[in-house]
Length: 360
Image 1 (cartoon, rainbow, N blue to C red):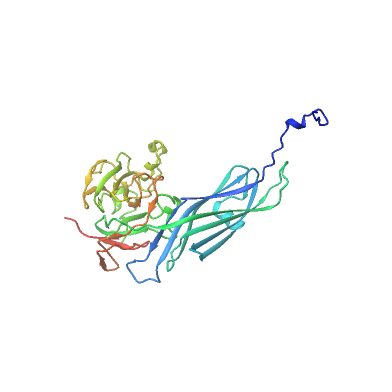
Image 2: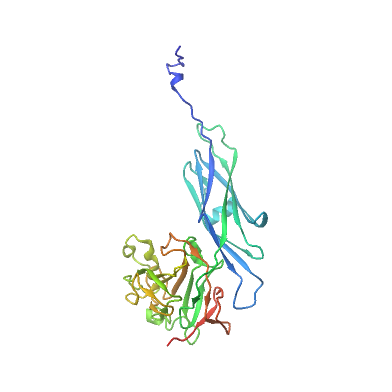
């Protein structure tokens, strides 16, 4: 017997699918590499560790109003830190006035950074998102609170390469790994990057008004290989920009790696790749695939790519591909800082003045 609903619909041929609204979370990177700052060139309050990540929050099968986030860092089962972010904090961080996540879309909370003591090392970060289901036409669970969780493992990279300081003379570490570092806007490849600007005899970064490239003491300074290896990537044809100028997107050619301008990446045959960026156009002295020794002249400091003024950008990754391979923490050796010479690897903190040895 065939059942007929009022109006002639065939009930046997209809299927009613009830979808339940939910949230999901994902961090980028999924496996977080922590920076460990336990060897500094001056007395300090103790070892510190740092993690940086992006968080993606996705609403599935319904709209969700995000109400809060909880971040917890654990060493095994021991809670090391906890932060609770209200909706007001999330709005300020994301710049979004409305925290409603439409069905099957997401919200990104970018450039999250946590700095804490390192007496016990983090083993994972646990994140909880709290939201409320929004009213929809076919929803029976509107207004109910929902939660989502994710865990991201934290590891500590043991540096394999002895990176000699790659510059000569007095240089100012404008940005390195701490809370003020703008490199953490890109948490995947560059969370531990460092920018160096050369200081002149009066302790300034430039002479005159700084509007000309030649005003800057960093301009045209030689850059040397911090360690030997094989050249895995080069970019050499980017023009040097006037200080403060914004590069035309046409010169990027759709390749995001060109944001860092003329650059050299060196493989050290141990899973570590050093990356030197914003070099001067046509100054590169090495070729892709070439084997080089520590101290080889790579090129000269320039102002190519997305750069506000002449400086050397340096970072280390587990591969040569910017935005694809993951950034690694590192330390330099064979440098002078705070009036002391360090032949062993040491962390360079932000705004430290570092002196590299003279080269013959």
